[in-house]
Image (cartoon, rainbow, N blue to C red; front, side):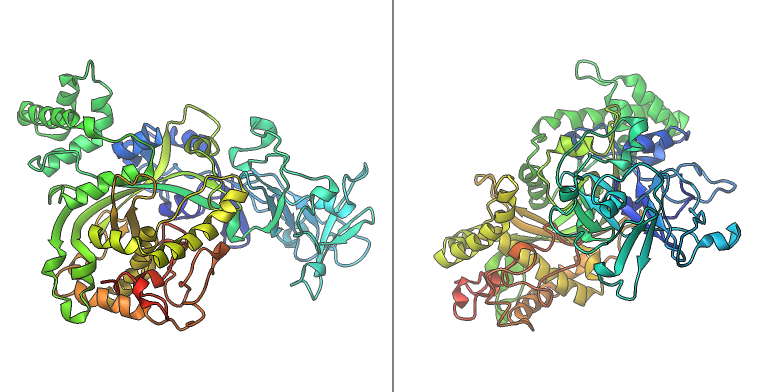
Length: 625
């Protein structure tokens, strides 16, 4: 394995999960290995509990027993626990070249040392054979790789490319030469010791590799060497040539969950912490729906004073029994909407308390004094939820290439990042923070969404969005006006929160609650929150901005700033812009956010849903009366 490299553990959930290449300093390109190899590393330590994450609701939905934190970087030293736990990497791409002489070499994925030029002698030009081994250049990875829409990734077939197919028998040494016009593909030439040569011009054309008899062999290098682990099934799909740093090489698939209180408000916080930490141990010992008291005695003995063991055993058992008696209402449906409906209801019900990781207070919109500034809160919203405390678990479930959504099922995604079926966990991060929840007026929303002009505008956006999905044979997802309105409102308010609070916009996130599948379960709201991987949470201040006297100005300014974009009238009159024309009146100058903020990859946005068109202001929700 390559030498140790520091990397933030949150980045191993997104954007650098299993199967992604990471560019490290000094021209090293490494790929994160699959969960089988993570498991091998976890087995080398004695204290695994510090890496276990409990989020029962999300675990049920994703079909796993537990979640585990990715290892953080630890320099071995006195008193350091689990210093040997590292994330395993391999070298990818395998093709490297020398910047001095151009010699190309296909290195081992397991090479732990940076490869250096072997000093092949060439008939012309520079050759590292002229200098001593100690002074030879380190090889650097080539920038060209190939991917396929099914998620496979392979080295660019330089040998086949330069020979127009399979090379003749014998020794073939490749050389990469970049001329003065190396910014263009025609300036990059691959030559072979047999005399064959070819530039990279045309390599990015459609089916360029299929024409020379090369297609996808189903490469999954993140699962190890193919010959050793028998992890390759021939795919046969056309390979797509890309640069290894391209944005479409890897899309991390993350499922998140807001923690919902599982315990009575009266349960002491210390008891909650002990129960959460040991819930797996306690629940696996159930017989006929009843807990084993002995297990509770062991937990009480480890966490409380000996003289209070019996007292806390009873308290722990009572709280746990109450929890499972209320568990019948839990939702195990795989639908994202029904999963979020539980969170939506919990926020509106002001669930949780100060002694838990979920604490909400709610203010009705009528308590906000904004009638003199347009009344957006009073007329367009029903209530504002202030989430003083929240805990979010973000679990990595897989990835896709070429397109953000490859249409795979959840089980298929999980199987793609591991070989062994014995892996019953997923990597996850726990983050804590606070947020502001906006509940839209159901009555006004229904009346506004029924307008003919609003429906036709939403249909245009929905058709643009689904056009590519349908060409790939994927299920159509109908986009409703309510969803576009809520989503765009969230982006505009995040921008305004960022300006008012001092948060960078990338530190804030949206979580949309809107029913697209199940019309009988109405949700019209959005949570804007900040969450940090640090145990102490975020900077704070977001809840304060959601209180009376502050939020009125923020919402007013967000809507007013949306009325004019520096790209208008082009932006407001657009019938499709951005990726696959999946936005209408929304661009980088007015409504787009950093990718970490948005659940929809900066798609499905339209300012006109809020403020209307230039010649038809009435379609704007906040102009609608």
